[in-house]
Image (cartoon, rainbow, N blue to C red):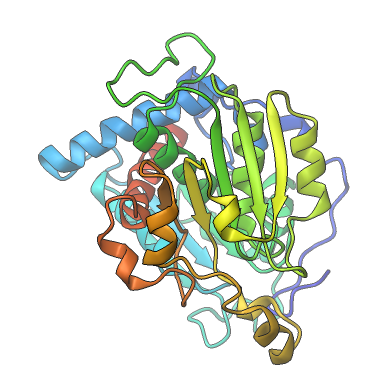
Length: 362
């Protein structure tokens, strides 16, 4: 698939293979330094715990001192060929909180770059920006494009995937998992992975993924990440989507290969949330539909409102990657179980941790 925004060079499959970097990000901070972050499959469970502990220390740092200068004189290239508010701003804020700075390139239609208009390949654009910067955060509408750029022969500095079409969004999945881990007091089945806090979770972890599961790269990455992590809890993933927007087969097949995971499918939202610990809501993505008619058929299929929350478990948290349209009523915002704005703040802490680890200053 060629992007209408910018051509992608064709590369050999060997250079574009994720298997070489699967399970490479570990507890040892040296395993992170100088590395790309392209897919959740790079994470080991010990690497997840290292990231989460670092994110917690970043939260303490911001709340006590606002930040520090560990990334002073480091420059981030923030390169977005698709619209972004939260991801771009949280990466930029993360860099600045740690004393660094950033260059922002809006590669979308009407954006601030001439590169794609002149026919330059994405690889060449990123290679040029690397001459001025230390790490690149890249979002592109073509699935697999960030992987091609990062794992090809052209780039020499770390590249972080900020979303590639309907593919993956690994930093979103990591901040989502961190939010669940932190809010519910989860334990990981590794050394030092037990949560001893008063709110520590026991029993199965039941996560409902609701809404547009076909186009939602956030839920693709989160389902994979939760399934492949060594939780000390049985994981139950419940998929609740309109008929044409179900979780893709390739994600379900990936999850099926993981241990201690059950997958269930629901059409009734009120049934899906019974006994749930997490309700993860996604919007129906209008921009991914071929026609307005197709979108109109499914928009508003599920709406989380105060009526649903009255019947939902008292300890179930509600998450959303945002932006929302009408799938969560604003009346729910004041419910303490609504944690989507806490989730957004966690995004900055997790991205501070990722930048610090990759740039060798954790």
